[in-house]
Image 1: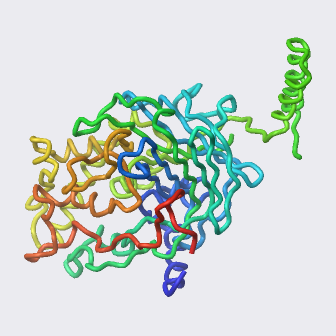
Image 2: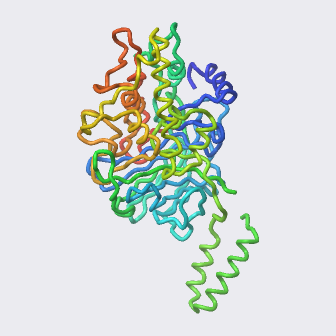
Image 3: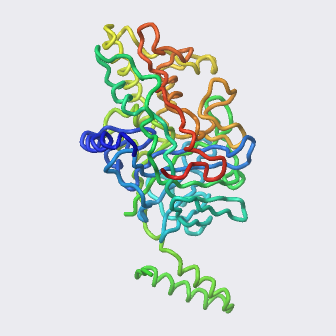
Length: 227
Length: 213
């Protein structure tokens, strides 16, 4: 990973030993950090201005520092995209992704049979599946216009994380905050991405609103380990 | 192929159901093919959670609090985490006060740039109340952007190119004009980390993120 490999190695050990946490959600907490279920990042956006589709990207794992699980989707880890339509902060629709034998299988979007911390795979609502990619992206698109991808990608997050840790603990000798320009800790890092582009009509109507009154889906992602 | 006894039982039940309910051999073969697929059985328990970027990382009080956040549900997060987030936000301001040779009381969070947009003071309590419920809002019928003062919408999604760290810093430390603590006048630079998107991280076609390095 470029010129900073050595530094990263040292930092990786330090991070695991002392509990230093990396944004956006990369290795953010002791119990999940560095595991195959560790969420690195989450994006949700319209692919082009005015599109009737939404793209969800979930990044699991990261090789931003050494010593972390990276490179293989875990068949015991179920990833869920939770979507609250009416603004009550409880999921009304769920999209699931789980790997089996080199393919990523998708289910939903459907109202889950239970909300909260435990889930089953929604096997009655298969959405499609795609071969897990190596370096080149392999994608599938269904007749309903849903596209799938799963595989390693560049970690698109950018953040001067090393300076951030110093910024969090200022002293009279070092109280200047961030450097401009800073150094992007994540340049050169990779992550295991799951991407789905789906027509909004399959998700449903948003009746909840955001802080400025626009109708929005309230969404969050979870990883869930087989018991 | 790996089979387990539960699946054998299930296949048996399904086959007997098909035999009883339907004499169509094609249907039976289709169902049989479906059952030859992967085994997705079992219960899966939540181990990690994410809505907005960086919230648990920056505002979580300690390792235990961050772990608790990851196995919580949004409907409970406001009550569970808002107070601690507010204390953490004020503590970060206090740390800079002391590092700058001032007293903690001299430097507090100032209502941020959203105050002008929303028409009321976005206090530390209001801001951390919003952030404590860790969901990413996504508008199906509006431009999607995390927040950008130059765009008339906001809190409508998160694009790959959105500079979420700078936006978060501006909302936490930027004050009413978004430029408080901008590195000038002897104050620290707390409203940008000075880095941007690396161009080859993203692409214009699905899956929109670049090949691994």
